[in-house]
Image (cartoon, rainbow, N blue to C red):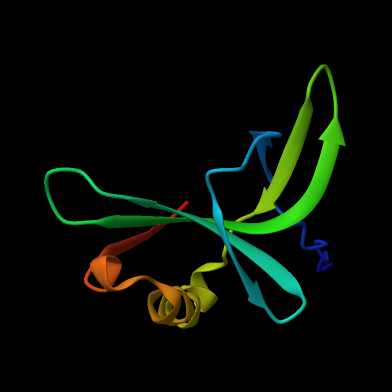
Length: 94
């Protein structure tokens, strides 16, 4: 007999202060990312989509990672919104 597994959304918990993140609206969702600049090539780290908050001992922001199938499209959206100094940045997804 074949069993059907319900698809669950994987969420990542971050501390509540995501003030250093930049936000892009993608549809009706908010995509969070960070830009870094060290001595080498600039780097953009895409955290994922904001999914609300969870209250535990401390309040945590819940982030839904970008699924593998959408990363190319989301990478293009992020790249088109970056400042000139980050136009050639490497984009990484968590």
